[in-house]
Length: 464
Ligand code: BES
Ligand code: MN
Ligand code: MN
Image: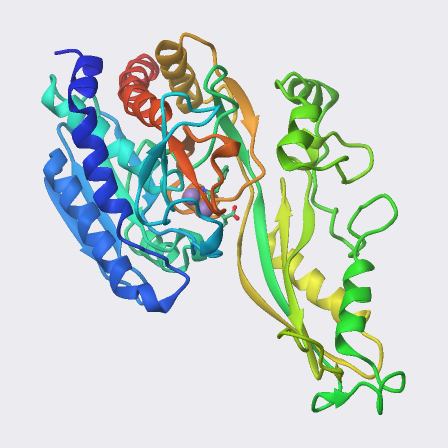
């Protein structure tokens, strides 16, 4: 039968299976959930086997497991490597969820009139990764695969993919492929699909400022010693200038400015500042002078504090000058900025601006390089045709502000480009309370992916 008929007839079972995966709280950042992360890996391997993969392995690492599976039908045909992740972000703050994060619930919203699955991981990335498993099943049950396929589904994407990096370097032959296919990004809207052509890089650091050797009475010592929180606040405030540019020397050295033509293309992306501000309930946007909002959140590098703490944070008031202050800082990187170099520049600058009377320590958490996909690449073209067929609308290229650091590493180590076929929406609240994924998006994804296989094969045969 046709793929669409098959998808419609099996829709409820697809959702039931996805819900079983979502119910496992596979939070990679929190060691309390380690056995749940393992359970999710086992579940993914069962799903891959049931969908028709021949070899399925759960590879243990020094962190969380990597699931590998494949269905190799003919060495003369090209091979697609599907990458995704089954780990999720922590669900806190729990009290802001309308329904519990690991009990998937379907509700409609203004943007998702056909309903959306509300749960942690519904969109990022269990729901999107699972679409690939169901596309595989759909193809195998209705005439077979056009290409060979390999799956590599990891459990540490949300914590920096440290062990996947090792796995990739040690298993290049096993992972050999013609193109990598990933659904872990978004698109502009359900009426205007888009394909992600850029991901930002990342450097994530944590700083610790130490003043006196113990917390002090803020009356007896206040005014006479450096207060680490006051100092940290002014050090952080000094990292941007009046044009909201990052002042770290060398920070912009490897940023390639886009051409006027490329900037004009970005400006064509449908975007309403009014709706943007309305959705966030802010009266004005804020950012680097000389760039539009769409540029600021995609093709420009940034520096942002993600968390700041220290001193007394309990109930009521306690008069104290703290011994220590802390902050977590992320820098989103673009074009040729090297994340190791940027991390070093940050450390050097941050230490240099510390006044006498405090000590500064900086720890690097993780990072990765930015990634670009040219729109004349065979993978982009095949994805373009797939979206056009499935949505009846030509997709637009879209630079994303998010990061999937392992994608640049794939290019370096496996020498293949990744096609970023995302089906989420910015409003899906990934990483936030009430994350959700539209049922329309889920089913459209399962429908679009086989069209990529078909169009990729067609273009591959023309080229080879
Ligand atoms: N899937 C996201 C990245 C993403 C989402 C890219 C939407 C583009 C559009 C991924 O799971 C993620 O959250 N990445 C982290 C980085 C990671 C190293 C923790 C990010 O971008 O903050
Ligand atoms: Mn993700
Ligand atoms: Mn994520």
